[in-house]
Length: 116
Length: 112
Image (cartoon, rainbow over all chains, first blue to last red; front, top):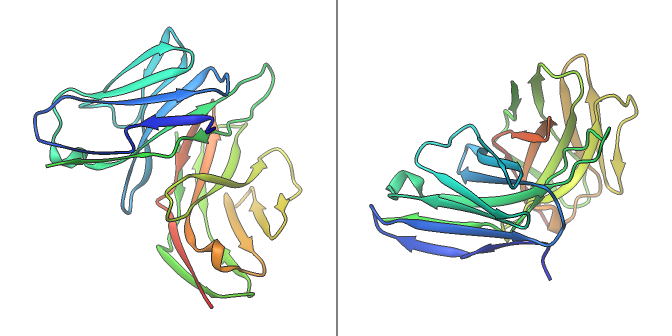
């Protein structure tokens, strides 16, 4: 079974609709992230969370909100979707150990979102 | 703040040949990591190789190796004996304070 899962894998929605993308992980990691990928722009950080009570805005948080329901679950919401939010969305996780500067992140399979 | 630049949007290599993908970065952090991720058509992000910035020795992972030039802030990926399965988009990234910054990616095609 995959360590990081995302649902749905693909979604088509209409402008103005509210939509939630969900991410679950079985890796036991504290840190979770949401990115969006656009052609020619790479991956950009939307929000990140270092534990259940810690939520931080990333580079492009406008128009998005998140919820960290548990250590293993991190959801991304688009309150009122717009066409320029059409993109590939990735959830990722990472671990942290005292004194360890490792920043490796483990990615889910991605959600392809289309806003019409 | 960190920035990552991948100036070549596309490259092509003949099967069994060697190709080098370029990456430059800028960071104000003294402790950081560097990564190359591969994204095949399945769109899964796969870690190819990682380099600790405090290590002078270049990382290697089977057919993949890096040329890390810290003073020049350069981190290129060399793929030896290219295979058809290496065709993908490759992203260079820097990591500091548990956050990654990605370049725009380069699409690598492999000619049979």
